[in-house]
Length: 57
Image (tube, rainbow, N blue to C red; front, top):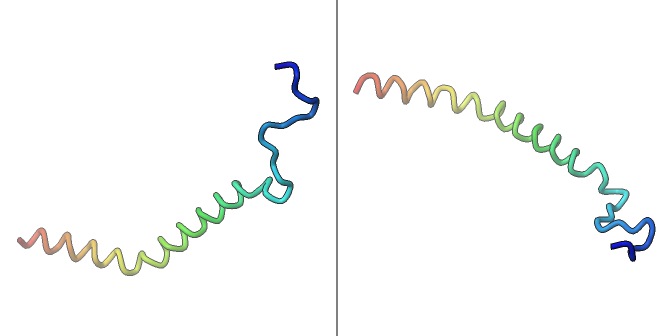
């Protein structure tokens, strides 16, 4: 495979997208954290209620 041009890259990366996977990962983690914080006031009483209901029955 020595017939390739010097500097030839099989996977060229556009300059604007170089940090995109890292940024997407960070944004995803922030979104999951926000969802957890927003849903916790709903989820915690529901979990407690289900456990109390199961204990009674």
